[in-house]
Image (cartoon, rainbow, N blue to C red; front, side, top):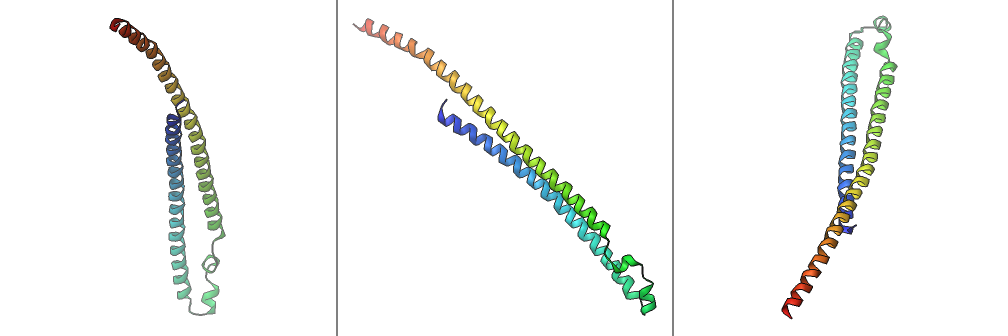
Length: 144
């Protein structure tokens, strides 16, 4: 097998693999960014509402009558965030692992194709060499 065709096949497979990895990483980061923005919006809305509620309290009695969620953060929201974050991170890891595995398969396929092309080229070259040698001998006999 021609070393340059091996190198080209390996480079082609590596570029395809890195492209797939980059796409998988970007998809994951995009999802995480969306999640972060969603959480920030919800936090901002909830905080604003809690502040407005707290500002309306005129004295200790009003303050004591505020709902507990006004005074404390919502732990369920944090749990949901962590679950979604874990789901996205797991999906991203899976996609990147699959991209690496497909890259290895493509590398093997490209090397196999390059090997087959090199074998076919070598066979074609070997078939033309005896004909050329016969022509040269025929031409040499005619000249003498």
